[in-house]
Length: 242
View 1 (cartoon, one colour):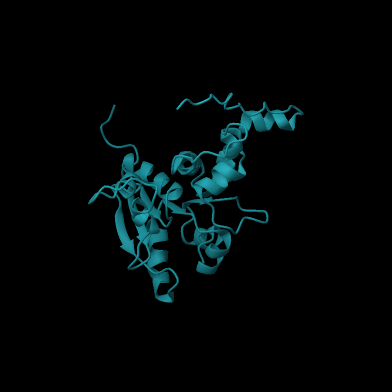
View 2 (cartoon, rainbow, N blue to C red):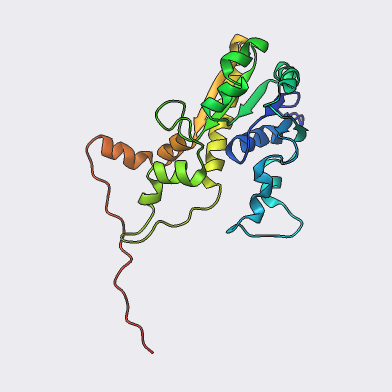
């Protein structure tokens, strides 16, 4: 087999923040894609500061979450709210094969980042967006996080706890990283479609949908009339001796 990376020559613009979207772009980079991460000036992606926030372990001088999910990317500071940024953004869209974003629908509309707005600039663009709660419904405009959308709203947080015990703390980013792989799969499907048709596409993923997929066996059981098994008990309390 050739030693040339599979996606060498592929251009990716990463407009996303935190974990799921950027991690999908990182996997593209692992296969050889040229990824340009666009961040707001001065502050950058807020994910840069996550390792300093409890309960995450701290290691002086090593920003391990950032290195994990944004390795091998080039970085560009751009204020997308500024009209002067528009020509730069449009140049990036024309250059890109793939664009990744996780702005909520209303924010995308305000910034002019919707697929229908950008696709005419580059008909071969594969536009990938990830949300917390999907594109429709009363919560579509809300920001979603691993713990709220993937774990809590999908039911996983309740399914994985013991009876009469508070839900456990989930491993940070676990839902985000699985959602990133789903988005990566969607991007690769879009690129395959482009090879077949010459046309780009829009692909999507959401933390809530990914959580529902993770819990899908029992969700399917409920849909066909079954009752999920009761949560396991912690067992009898043993007496303590002084």
